[in-house]
Length: 315
Image (tube, rainbow, N blue to C red):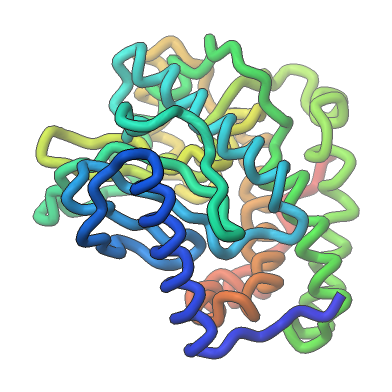
C-alpha cells in the first residue's frame, strides 16, 4: 500500500494531537495536567502531565500492523513485565501508581502512564560499561512468568517493513532492497519461531529479555540508573539485547554474567543477532515517510551495512 509522506506541519499537528490526547486522558483519570510538557518526540510523544508526577508515552510512529488490539496487547505486556521487575527491586521506571495499570485509548492513540523520575543531566552514558547491568536484568527476567512472543522486534517488524519498502519504491535503493530481502530469506526460518531457532542453535537457551538494547534504554536519575522502554519485551536469546555493543561490550557483559549466574554469550548466536539488528535498521526505512528525521539517523547504519559482509551465515 502507498504510504503518506508527512510534512513538518503534519508532524507538528500529530504531536499536538498526542499531547491533547494524553492531557485529556490524564484528566479523565483524575490527574492534574494544567501544564503538560513534551519530554521527547520521536517514535513516541512523551508527555509530563505537570504538575502531576506522571509521564505519558504515546506511540506515534509504529511498524505497519502494530495498532489497535495488537498495540494494546504489546503495551499490556510491557506494563506487566515492568511492574513484576519493580516488585522484585529491579531499577526500572515503574508504571504510575496513580492510575490503573493498563493501556488507555483516547482520540486514536493508545498510551501508557509512568512515574516521573528526576533525570541527572550531568551523568554521561557509557553504553559499553553499562552492558554489565544487562546481566543482572537477564538474571531477574529468567523467572518472569508472563507469556511473551518470540523475538517480536524481528519476527513481527522486519517482514512487514520490507513489504512496505517493496510497495513504495524510492524509500530504499533497489540494490539495498534486494540484499535485504536475501538476508531475511536466510534469517526468517531461524528468527521467526522458537522452534526454528532451537533447530539452528540447539544448545542456546532462550528466556524473557528486554528486546531493545537495554544499555541504550537506561535513564540516569539522581538516585541511580533505571531501565526503561520495555515496549519490545520478548522471549529470545540474551544475545539480541547485546547485538549492538560489539566485542568490547560482549566482554563486559560476559564478566558480569559470570557474577550474576547468567550464561555467557554464544559467539555464533551473537553474530546472527548482529546481522538481524543491522537488517532491522535497514527495514526501518519504511517508517521514514512518517518520521522524516529518521533518514538522517539511519544513514550511518545503512552505509556500514552496505560495506559489511552478511554475518548471518548458519553453517
